[in-house]
Amino acid sequence: MRRRLRAPVAALLATFVPGLGHAFLGRFGRAIVWHVTVLGGAVALYSLSDAGPVDPTGSVADVAAAIPPEIALPISVLVGLSAVDAYLVARSQAAEADRAAATAAAIRRHATDGAEEDGTGVGREPAEPEAAETPDRDHADVECPQCGRETDATLDFCHWCTEPLPWADDGE
Image (cartoon, rainbow, N blue to C red; front, side, top):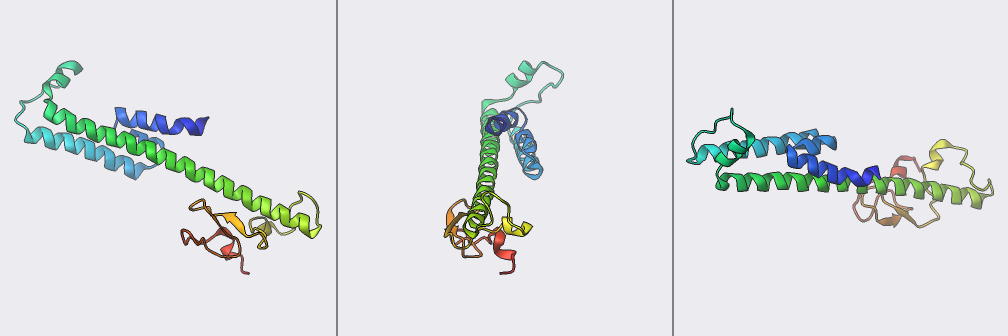
């Protein structure tokens, strides 16, 4: 439930304060870039327009009414893009976490299947700790932790995204 709410919360925060949704997700560099972009765009557009000075001591409604629509519309679009980007980043992080969990489960399942075939016991952990992370090479397909597609377990890299697989360093 918590992972499902992360994307809308990030988008809502980015709508109120550009960059805050990205900071909520832990992407601080991206948060600074979006905040500076929206704030810099607002200052640049206002300074290039022929609108008069805004009295900052007035109410929020007075300040909002003093900003011309030709400035407010592009700034609203930038704020909207910031919110959409925060939403997409949150969805991407959730998908990446799901792929990593599925890959870990597949590796554990393949290691357990190998233990059953060896006769070492049903559901028992292998004797060597690093062998738990290595899938049984006789089983042809595992899920790549990077792209999430099924790939050949006998290779040391994913043939879809060419990223090295976690068991590539086990010295076989």
